[in-house]
Image (tube, rainbow, N blue to C red; front, side, top):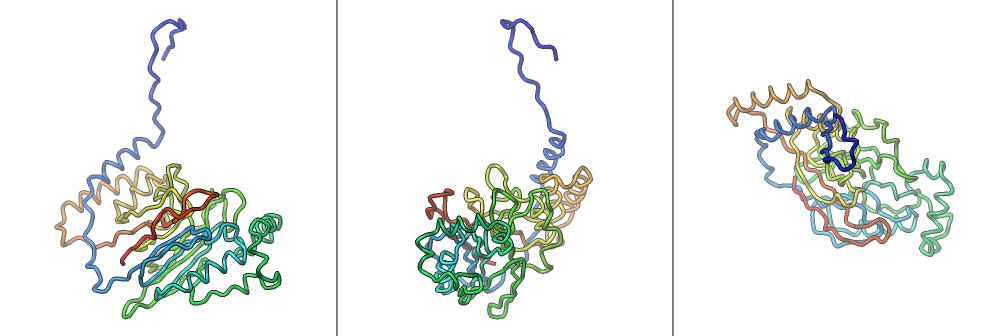
Length: 322
């Protein structure tokens, strides 16, 4: 295109620049919109009532009754002993049958390697949390002295929970992509998630969101986590970290759904678009009752506070039945 050197000449409209994957993503979106979702299995006779919260940052919001209480990290503002213990005491007093907690990037006391690597940051946090920290003797303010009550704490580990004649598997991890100097973080370009989620995981509890799912307008989630969720297909993924992403949504990770997710996140190419097309045609050709039944994956960003400094409870706990 040649531009007119005469400043008084006609104004030319800018040329549209299409990114290399623009057409691929556009076609993927069109196929996804045409996809008839597979039928779901019959719901259980006695569903498990799950209450999800995250990013309380020292607040203690009112919680609804339920069978299972999940906290997806950032219990505190500074991550000190007294802050964490106050949250554990509050959570332990709740009436839910099981209570499962992971840490977040603010919960510094629970990340021993972080405190060793960044002693100045840990000293600063303790100083900022005064006078709360003065209430307990220093020699007792260690991770080992925390009273967890009946809380199950997960740190890249799993637990199996029983509710009457049903059992569910929960996997929890505090990891989030690096942003500033905080606990439990990894470089953004490092894949720490591949094959990490154990088989038969029903609930995934992480502090940070998967990329593209309730992770804010900047899409601050981890694409490697998204790929692992698409592979493992848990029934429920609970997280927080990105406060503005609060909400709930569903995604079906059948052949079409997984390919669509991979194209959007950028880890697969044109071959997956062909897979989408074949699966789409095949799904439309089969009667609905012949198709394999698949549960959708429910994503819940359960951050209850807003803001980054003056933490105030804004969002209600999220209630889910599985």
